[in-house]
Image (cartoon, rainbow, N blue to C red; front, side, top):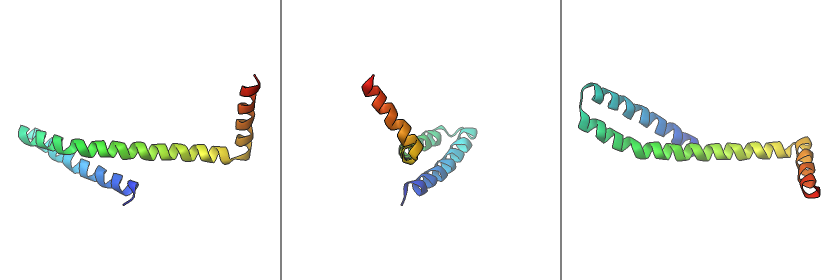
Length: 86
């Protein structure tokens, strides 16, 4: 299972649990609210981890794409050389 499909699955699960939690709050079922919160917390942490990983990969790809452009690569190399010459 790739990360994006797992992220989509987690989002769907969290949406369902959030709806259940909202209904439990309306019905003042506080034990259920707490149980749902405890169920949601690890899923939210996993979701955050995956989102951070995907964002990191997107940032690295953007840097690679920027560097692969000849004009940007030349500007980057000139900037590095100027740092050493100053």
